[in-house]
Image (cartoon, rainbow, N blue to C red; front, top):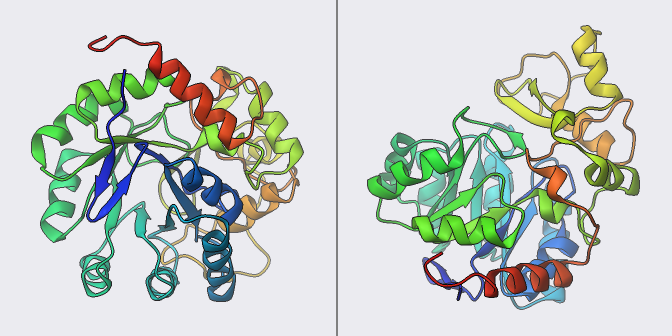
Length: 318
């Protein structure tokens, strides 16, 4: 099967694969640039970064590739506006908003002539985003890693969204192999977003022990936690998860007020940051539902080669 190109606003990706923006510091310039260099869309996860760090990451990505580079930012973080505006000022190619969106962000995109792409989990939210000015939407189902907006599978939500909007629709959640891409493209999606497969790449910012968790993760090791953000989160079992299940007091000694709203049960950004540093006693490892399909930690170039070979082997119309 021949893959279509992915057009978002004035951007044109040769391969319709968007790399998920995985925080904290799993998706940095090295990973984003590697994906963009292959013809996909590379995403830097801005969540958990300060302004100067985000500027450095965007500039570093630009040094590594001339491909398409975007950012992903969690709408729930208090410095969301500052991070997005900084990225726009740096000339980022597109902005992906996770776990929510507002009218303001579309106005910022219009001012900078930059596509704004919210992640949605229903046709209702997709329609609202289109009316506000979204250039595309990412439709994310329950199979995705990280914060989730639904308990419904992506393949149930996708047809509903495709029928409701005219902008490009990018499917996310549970996409690991070439046949997964072909299936959702055949359903009408303009492209796919892949997070976990790229988290388990050589260029990913995940430390070696977390990458080993990805490799050895089984279906029964993937669990749901209740994030302080107010949403469920899909993660891997770990010592930190065990403490959560036991009801241990994991509240932070000092609160940085990093979220607009927070339950205070634990600091989500600190837990993700700890995991990125390899501390599984205090770290939370987000992951997608289909992590068990991943059997090797590979360079991004090899991942793309394997995906395209798998796709080429699938006849048209299958």
